[in-house]
Length: 303
Image (cartoon, rainbow, N blue to C red; front, side):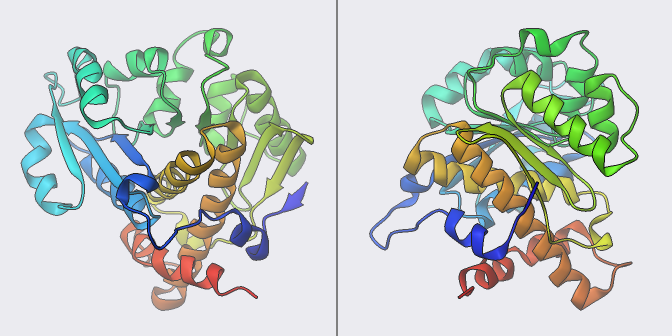
């Protein structure tokens, strides 16, 4: 196991050439939110923008679109039909070919704040785009028996579970020891051929790379991040980084790994910076989000 270091993250960051335009930095499609949890999508979409994505599209419940479009004018909001529970409806999948043809997204972040949306199983099973599986998308998978046996191994994917989500995905108990944590994150990566996180103190990131199964442990973070919305910010940071790296170098397990490991480090550093200003009790996910630019600057200043 190797530590994720500031010097290493600096080498992984996307290059931003002076002559580039927004199309050079990728297009993130965030599919997130429900009647009661649209804030998750807001945090994710804004974090993707702050991490450098050229364009961010946010598919969300139609009845929430006007207010959240005003809350994040930098994102292009795409209203989708909802069911009686206020979740995005299965019929929304019929619109996705049109969305992809019109906006040409580079990757999808699926799950933040989506509850038990019937759209999720359709999206996870049928979308061919590179994918970040987060939050309620992980829960949707865990409700499907032997879900990993039919998972498309050739689709570049990043999984972002915390300890409880990981246990549900694998049908195991929550890992209590460091050895058990490592075993679980490696198992998920082997079952899916994807890049896998196990979030928590000293978040783990692993993938089967050219040098074999490599596992990295994060060296940043604070208990201040133990707050609702932190994971939504993290998935957005990873998405913004992967959009840039994938557009420049190709969407593969290698760019997925660099985006995931860098995103974990930068998110943890932003949490540390927020805690320095507000203490460990009072940091909100939006405070961590506000510290993302400073975290990027600090890494870039590494000698």
